[in-house]
Length: 75
Image (tube, rainbow, N blue to C red):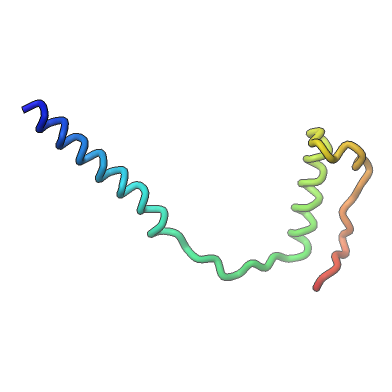
């Protein structure tokens, strides 16, 4: 009797784990538009650079006073 309960519990747990693993794959949407405006790109680049400098991220020690060019080179 106890073996049956353990077996059923294990089977239910296995089914739940499989369902949890499949849900993200089923609900994922494919991204087709990777474009971003130059204004948004400038804002994100500037914010990230300031964040790296302020946090003392290795490799950004000598970047104090650096800035991102608001007129990007577009290709």
